Structures are given as structure tokens and as C-alpha cells.
Length: 300
Image (cartoon, rainbow, N blue to C red; front, side, top):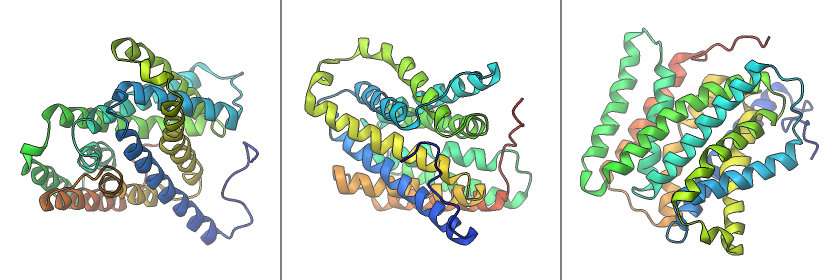
């Protein structure tokens, strides 16, 4: 597939194009959660840090081959935006894998999703939007009802991942407006890889030499990074931001189902109710926003 060719072709009508873009977003959601479930099955053999590094290394190589990035002629602002995107990307992936190793995937992603929800509500001055804040708060309270099952360190890592996800949203949009195709995503992935490489000195990197681990890690990198991030970048050029945000609200539910199907993680009824509250709060807040939370300045 030519690296510069859009996946949503001009031969579609506007309505068909929107439908294809929505399908791409949903496919990306399931891809990233499938990758997360597969990664967690390896935590007995590879540390979360090693798994994240392997995921980023494989996805960076995939992007290098797929995008064949052109890096010349970039401004200082272009580089700063892409580097910031990479820092957010690396922090988000590292923190959420640390959380996955301690608490169920569905709960970790539900807590993490408070970050994007905060972005959706940022700057809102409408009293009715407090309904979504309250609904999300109810979800957090319901998660706390099963505190015996939750490692507080895992919860803290999920909160950190949520903060990084908020930064990812901001810098992903800015990177997409300044860099063509997947070039900016490649730079961000490379920055994240370099950022996390010193962490291998603090963990057992021996299993990373196992061909089986390398092969599974490459699959995780493809499923959790290359496929979803690429589909999101393409879809964001065709789907309204509010619609994209509503679709992304499915992430916690998809994570819970992936955890159940792949890792066998059972959630209590109150925890499923918490996932539902956060999904509804995020969908409602995004629809209420009706416009992007941040306006991207034109590139210099």
C-alpha cells in the first residue's frame, strides 16, 4: 500500500466516507485492547517495562517501513510538537502497562479514561455538563466499592496514564496538523523508544532475546500501536471530532471485554457498572462539547 495514499478513498460519497472512518476507529479500539490482552499474558516472562520497550521498538520499525518518513525541512516548532507527542506516548504506554500488571485491564483503562474525559470537559462553563462529571465520579466511587481487588499502586499508574493520555490527545492533533502522513507518529514513537530504553537497565532484558517473545512482541506492537494509531490519524481527517470522541468512549468497555476473553479477568457487577458510567459520561461530555476542546494554530 503506498504510504501517502489515504485509506478512506475519494471514491466514497461523504456519507460512505464517514461510515468507513467510523469503522476504522472501532477497528482501532479493538486492535489496541487485543494487543493489551496478549501483552498481559507475557508478564510472567517479561517485565511490563520490557514489554512496552519491545512494543515501541517493533512499532517504530513498522512505521519506518510503512511511512518512509521525510524529516528534512522541519521547523523547530514541528520538532518540539513531535517530541512532546513522543513523551506523552511513552509515558502513557509505560504507565498503563505497569497498571495492567497490577489490576484488571478493564479497570485500568476505565481509570485511565478520566484523562480524555477531562479534556472533553476542559473549559466548559455549562452547568448541565456537571452531569457528566457526576456520572464519571459515580464510576470512580463504584470502582472503590471493590477496593480489596485493587492494588493502589496499579491505580496510581492508571491515573498517570490518564494524565499522559490527555497530553497525547493534545499533541497528537498538533502533530497531525504539522506532519504529513505517519511521519510525525514515527518521530513520536522513536522519541518514546529512546525515553524508555534506560528502563531496560533496571529490568531483566534476557527474555527479549527469545525468538518467541520477539515474535509476540512484534504482534503486540502492530496491534497496539501501528494499527490503532494509524487508523486514528486517517479517521480524524474524515470524522467530526465529537463523533470521534464518542466512539473512543467505547475504550473502557472494549478493554474489560478483552481482559475477560483473553486473560480471564472477571469483574464484579459494581465494576461493570463503573465502566458503564465512565463510558456514558465520556460519550455525553463529548457530544455536549460540539467542537474540539483545543484549536490548533496554523503551522508557521
